[in-house]
Length: 73
Image 1 (cartoon, rainbow, N blue to C red):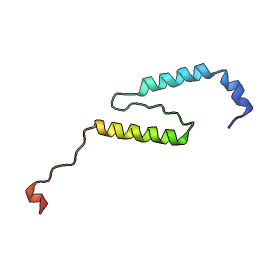
Image 2: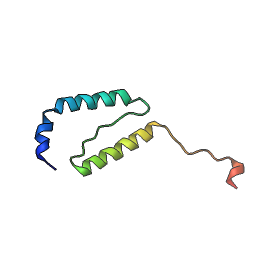
Image 3: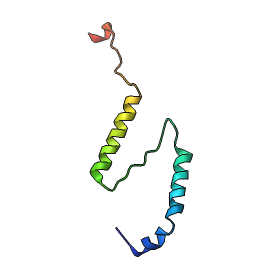
Image 4: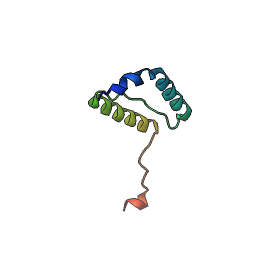
């Protein structure tokens, strides 16, 4: 949605982008990274989110626990 205030705010675009980058850099960690995913096209955004989650889960190397013989019966 567009409003007349958007024209004025556009003049601050570089400052917004710098603040955005600083916030991500200050808070992103190797064990909890940020991901910036464009949301212009909802179907693309949802696919990217799903792929990111699946890839991160694969990197965890999770597996089902093994069940001993005594626990199977």
